[in-house]
Length: 280
Ligand code: ATP
Ligand code: MG
Image (tube, rainbow, N blue to C red):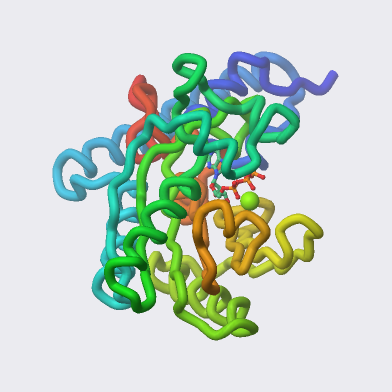
């Protein structure tokens, strides 16, 4: 009878970043399987251990932080965007202004701290406020971005975490009406060049509510979503110019770059660091 890895063996191999092909192997009997497992586990544990040793000894910066740094350097030094830091705790009013009320799909994903305060599920509401106020001061195009934690209740899975790092860039009054998609496309390509990811595709989708949107996808992973205005929500925020914006998932980019199957290897964790399992 053909044998596959046991659930526990499989789980351990996944933890150690075994390839998909390896996980699906068949064996003639349990004995052959178990000895193969022991050999593979030892070899993979060594690879994980070497990664940690290399990180502590010379590399010093996990891939996730490296991706953030590359994006920030690109935006501030090449693209003339200014970094902002806004609150992680936001009010229900801010979500309502984004039309995230009870019926909205995102509403069920929000972590509430009390009746009026929650952990931000996105950066858009804060950036709307910020870009409006900055535009009043400087009058010219406003280019800002924030990189920081966002929180969503997710049914987990390999591409979702409850806490993740979003980098959201927005440019207000930077292009003439009609030029938004071209600008978004240019920024998306430049961002991928800056982080060093080349196996990606841009997907433009037409939605009735949001107009045209642009996603950056890598295999079956959505790594970023872009949108532009004028947009039906803008009036509520006192925004009356064209804008373009892209929200990038830092862990998703790190996952794609490191070739990892699951996002938890690169996200905030006590079990993994820089893609390597700690209990090897
Ligand atoms: P998905 O459809 O994959 O759940 P989304 O379209 O809801 O993502 P957006 O609101 O477009 O996500 O957020 C912008 C980016 O933030 C996404 O493209 C993705 O890279 C990242 N992101 C969103 N939710 C999560 C999550 N729970 N964990 C990790 N990254 C996320
Ligand atoms: Mg999206």
